[in-house]
Length: 374
Image 1 (cartoon, helix red, strand yellow):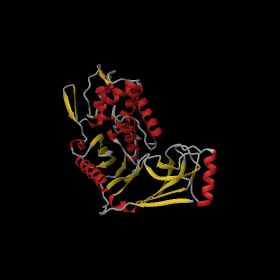
Image 2 (tube, rainbow, N blue to C red):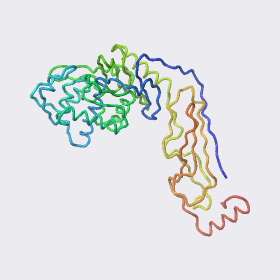
Image 3 (tube, one colour):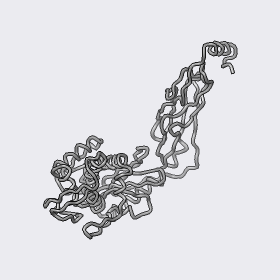
Image 4 (cartoon, rainbow, N blue to C red):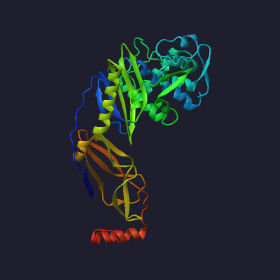
């Protein structure tokens, strides 16, 4: 017999407001659920400027995690690195600088000189390191990115997209959550007696921002790869092409606030949560718990929660033997504006088959009364 039931989630609702942005390129997603909250020209190729450096840094993080490089390893400063134009960490030519200092110089001070030192020390040449950046980006799924240098300085063909930068940012947070991603939250750094503040002004606001990188060139305009965490939610935001730094700050602040305030993550079931208790036919136990084998969470506008519905279906009774994790039914979630999403309904634990005489007894009772013997 097919057994099913439907759950509805009812709340008092409010209005959901669309949001406008002057940024030419925008991409915003919920880190936990992957739900896209806003996109505008997200796949349009654009000049990333210093936002390119999150890919430079990602490769350094990889070498640190693998053990190929250590934070206290010292790298040589060439004349080419020392004289690199644009924003600088102010390393001195013919000196040796620890990798950790160089990372802070890239992330906090946006040092183009530090980027080249890292590239030459870890990749041989900046061009070779940039080629590796492109290969790694494509492996991540950021397939519309081409990195020709490590700094983001103007270079024809050095392009990416807002979506690709979000992919790189997400991978950085997932791959290096504690050891290294923390550097992106540093508000200032002093090197060579020169103190510089992080250009990411979101870090100075009470909104949970902890990364990642700003960028600006005449060709690209002002942009930022931003991430912020409030409670259990994290949002990743990329904006680019704005005319002024204050516009970048205002747009990023408004969009992140909108993402947190007008959307909410609704957990239908957590991994291992008991969804129902099913009867078992000819089993050593008469009942078994049915569970979700994964977290089922959706990001939705707060006013849409009442439209979320869950349908549970499975054949009852279940027939032993059963193994923990066996899929025996379906959890179907109707998500507003997204349609029906299906998830496995699984057995929580092993239920071996009953002994021979117990099975005979159960069959007899079922024929007489349509149920198990007690």
